[in-house]
Image (cartoon, rainbow, N blue to C red):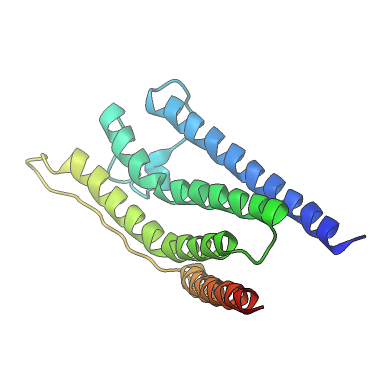
Length: 185
């Protein structure tokens, strides 16, 4: 099999995989929109945020606030899948060592890097906002909960994201050097 055909085939696989990611995340956003308007049941967002002991149920405003924070990392995941699709399409159509591909690779690295802090902050701010929404007006006690936790996967995401950004920078410089060399010839 020719090398270009193999790259095209692998790029097609990457496009298919990122398309599946886009489709799954769009279905998630659709299901959460239905949940927001109370059209589906069975999803316990209060338990997902770890607030079962201080918040019983969520009304529309509570669901909207909770979903805003809970879906932040999924929004980053959707952006990641869209850029990955464009990256693989560029591999298929224009080749691997292009400036666009290098810049997209860097963007993907920054998104992976951002997943960890966005996940940590959205969880903390989401639990704080929802618990305050339901308990700050309580004359008896104010029971607001903000929890911050860092997992080892958060550290891996930061490191892997920065490594991909570094590789993206190297590719950008390599493409520029290659273009300069071609200009001399």
